[in-house]
Amino acid sequence: MITETITRNESRQREKKKLITEIAVIVGLVVIFAVLLPLALSAFRLRLLGRFLSFAIVALGIDLIWGYTGLLSLGHGIFFALGGYALAMYLNLQLPPGQMPEFFTLYGVTELPFIWQPFYSLPLTILALIIVPAIVAGLLGYLIFRNRIKGVYFSILTQAALLVFFNFFNGQQKLINGTNGLKTDTQTIFGLLVGSDAVQVAFYLLTIVCLLAIYLLCRWLTTGRFGRLLVAIRDDEVRVRFSGYDPTWFKVLVFAISGAIAGVAGALYTVQTGIITPNSMDVAFSIEMVIWVAVGGRATLVGAVVGTLLVRLAQTFLSEQFPEVWVFFQGALFLIVVTVLPDGLLGGIKRLLTHFGFRKTLITYPSIEEAPEVQLEREELDHK
Image 1 (cartoon, rainbow, N blue to C red):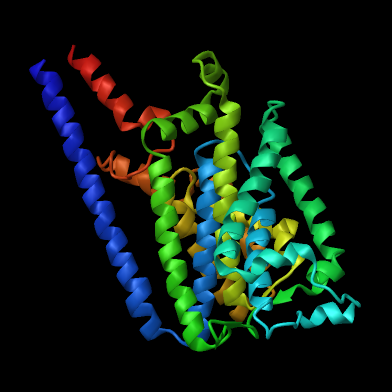
Image 2: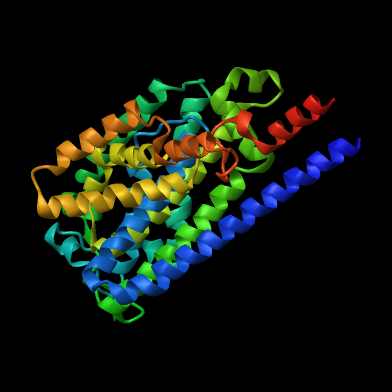
């Protein structure tokens, strides 16, 4: 009994140290990105970094469903674009009373379509860019998961849905300007030009806040009983069913949450890019999202952010210096990760630290076998 108490106390102390380390790292990074980098970077570079941070947000959502739940989605561009279009529609309606966005007149539209009406309101727009992608993801997930479709078939279906949405949005000239998309940098928000440096800095800081909040949300979801259940669904869904749980609704829920996260990322990306078009639903772009997570390391959350920033920064540097080389570099990078570092950069670092005796360094765990509670039970059995 005494040994069991000591073991539990040691486990709590380890978890407390990990938490303190994580908080310290987060505070340090927030200070660097929110205070130091805006002073050191030009307006163009800061806007570019803001886009990369918005990509990191969608990568967190993909890590949540792929790394922890085992659902490889190749269609997250749908939810990303829906969030971007929602905010772009609001910005395009910031006009004097009685006026409509200019592109409507080009197609002979004389009355604002009813689907645009709610986007006069900023609160409704914010709700829409979160809820609409979540509902679409939830419905798509339900139709797939209720038939127990998973693995490569799930990936194929999400990519097929992506192509359907891409073609649909391309053909909606009278509704959302079709292939031309909706511009945002020439619009105003609260009387200020969206493309101005001051507003862009504000959106950059907002992106940091959203990235931190969504990281904490994913961190909370992947710990405790719910997090262990997601990992169990990934590792052995049949056993989860025999344990009395219905994985369908858990997968629908986590897929909807991931879709909502992608919607937030799409909205932040749109205002820092200046335009949203159906190209956001391009197949290659959705696959690239998966590459970011694979490079950083699945089921780590931190790896999703690190992988996104590293890949996008490398792309920017190489496309500027060697524009004809970047595509080959991206392909080589993915091959190296798959063959040499299957667990990504953070997985490689973890193996290296384990080799030197720092087994419990990382905060998250990619396998149910590495959960602190499971390890504690094993230690208790060993002492008995």
